[in-house]
Image 1: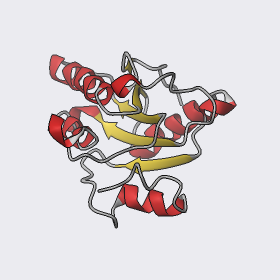
Image 2 (image 1 turned 180 degrees about the horizontal axis):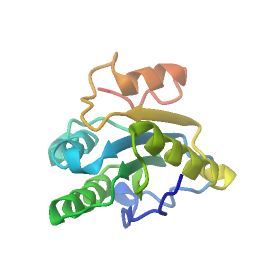
Image 3 (image 1 turned 90 degrees about the horizontal axis):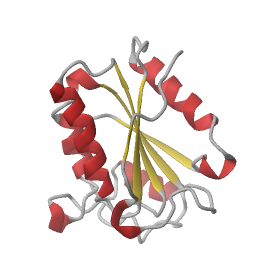
Image 4 (image 1 turned 30 degrees about the vertical axis):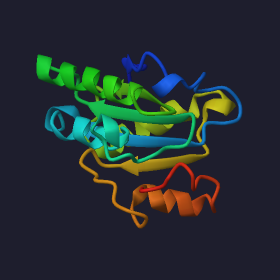
Length: 168
């Protein structure tokens, strides 16, 4: 399965956090697999949940050095799809402690292909870049309360991240 290296990356880690891939290991990678032509409206809205409340988000807090990884297919074919990817990078650049990477999987025929490409991409990273925990989220996931997606990750980590997952 062919995939293109990172096509869109946030210019900096949200809110002045230093190098995302410095040791210790990346604690969390939130993986979105999307058919970009179907998600131009939902994907930016979903990512905005991670913005602070004062910036229009829901204040879902992530641990330092979190990577938001979007793998998508097919190649963008119009300005709306390109603008969506650029908007996603801008949104995540404003999320505290997070970075954004987007990878096109041009030959992906289904969501499984796109997820497989993401896992291959992650497996090819240096050891300190491989996340301790992977969360798979759909492009239209609404993060809900303590029993929601990030809350489940919090419980998996047995209290290592409670200060970062409040309200999630």
